[in-house]
Image 1 (cartoon, helix red, strand yellow):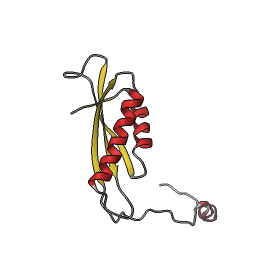
Image 2 (cartoon, rainbow, N blue to C red):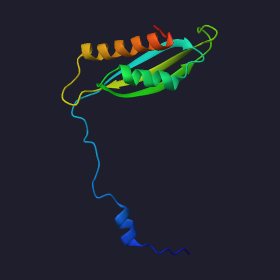
Image 3 (cartoon, one colour):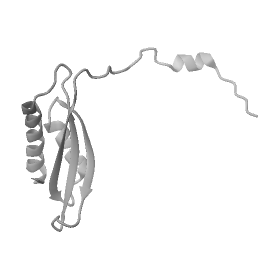
Image 4 (cartoon, rainbow, N blue to C red):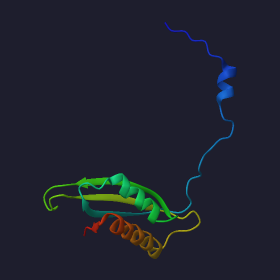
Length: 119
């Protein structure tokens, strides 16, 4: 048998009365993937930070989903793949808007890390 005594006044005082939430989005996200070839020593987290900065305000999230070394990848290199989710709060994105964000992310990876887009 267990027993506990709780000080409800202290618990209630610790609660922030302002409720924080984000409403569900009204418009759909567009998901695109990028796979690039980089030197083995390049940190995936640094690459992700670069994508987050370069893709712009339409970028909702970036997720690393694959790092591969092996058959078909040159020695000293690795393939790194990210999934990008793009969304605008006030409209459905066009293909052109998504393509622009993707080109910016790829260009930044090429410039900063010498990345090569995988086909």
